Length: 246
Image (cartoon, rainbow, N blue to C red; front, side, top):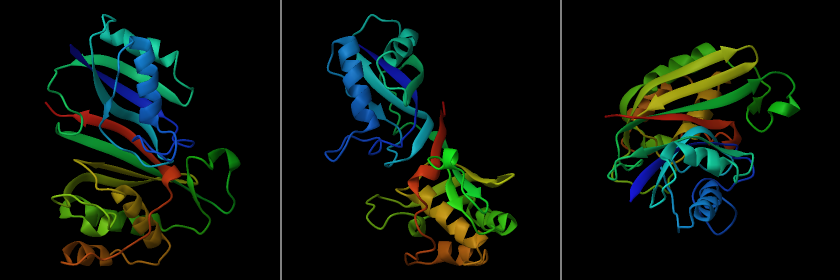
């Protein structure tokens, strides 16, 4: 028996997220099905990040156990021949049997992409959230700076979440401007359900003048859950990569 790690990129547009569910096709379901056929074994992969419906990825990570004699690095090539064009394995490698992508310490990087101009661009509609009012990106960065560090992010996650702790650490949160594009790039040790999308929605409201940056520390310090911004649409979010610590 050996454990194989896959690094996976996908366009999440037509999928109901990563995790298998009864209401539609998911990325996990498609990969399981094709791996099972390829290896002639009953394969169920374990993913690191359970991205939502419509969210994209450049470097999500999953593992599975197999008895196959196919070299680990060749599995990516064989599997890609079977997968649809909107899911592509970037690499495959053998890892220790006790390696678990959800419990191993890691740093995750997400990007939320905004198209900020008077009129939208059709070819960008599936990957950017369109905002026609001018955003004040200096204020957005000012607000973002307050979120860096270890905080209780209870106000930046779904109210339905059930976790032992809502404390997380954000290592960096940058507002990057490239012409009409505003990219929110966030790195952290883990994220709560809908946390990045709520951060994005909050920073957009800051950029629109709806929320003042000075409100952010008060929200973080509040003992009660305080709603600061809406969930930004899923299609603007991309999981860039996951770095695992030794």
